[in-house]
Length: 261
Ligand code: GLU
Image (cartoon, rainbow, N blue to C red; front, side, top):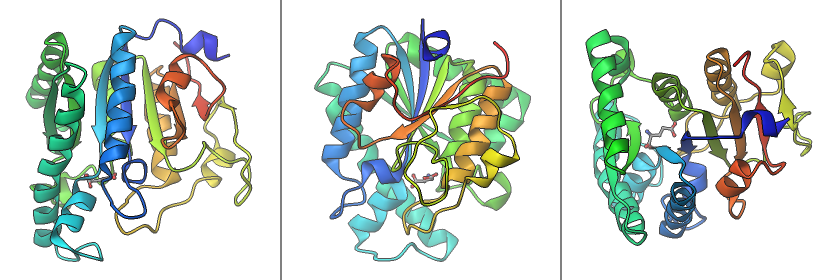
């Protein structure tokens, strides 16, 4: 099955959540950022272009500011994101440089993808970054995003970027091994052929301080991309070499099959 959908990958969008980038002691652990960077460079070495959608700004900002709880007011949240985003890009820049690779920061709001002129411009700018051989690292522009213009979570943002670029695959890295077949049971569903109400019921939200999203936003993201004829894989970001395993078609995580390709 995976052979049909994961062959000839030319462009892959990878979404990394805060849970993948954090450790017990740090919400943006540099070793975790390095591991992801090394793996993305492994994909580039295989001739696969990668667009990274990375969370972690608010977590990194909270840590730097010594905040134990997620700020409650919008301005404090936006300020933490601004401070953390610089840390996040600094770490990515350093680790990609070790492989002789360049990165580009792209911060988006929902508005950017809703108005035609801006949509076209975002698309061609990302394509140009890829032509330069650099890796676009996308996050929501939390510092200016207010409710009306917000994606709200990076699963949604990643799904929209995937369809915008007509990528071949979206990989969402999470802190679980995939979509579990029963609530509370650690039995991963290998393949989802149709996102029906049964599948939607398996999703639940999140209660972590640094995270938004949870399985329900991932299922929604899967719906967006599979409706556009693109497959999606949810897998555990902490599994050693997970990105390489996925593109090598190993049986890891859950694959959502596109409606038709
Ligand atoms: N944009 C947020 C951040 O960088 C995260 C949003 C999300 O994790 O979905 O912290």
